[in-house]
Length: 130
Image: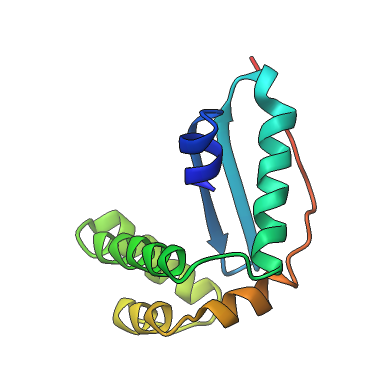
């Protein structure tokens, strides 16, 4: 998404997504100008369809995994982040250590991404202005 919305199409000054495991939700956020709204939403929808159809490369999968692993490792460097991580574990009745989380991410395959993507449903789109 970052590459296609921000880098290739220059539509956003930021583009990111995150998964909230306690709610099983994915949030996609893009910082865009109002005139780029429709085009950005269309590209995001296309990206989701590409994932569902398997139109992702092994390089994209590897890059995503590296980014996520790096983010998890950064959690352990800041007290507030690690406390938040383990508090979220507690709230979701999980005992997943950051080391095990990293192992889980490293085990992700292109096929597993495609299978999960097929269950993703677009729910809410909103635009904040002013």
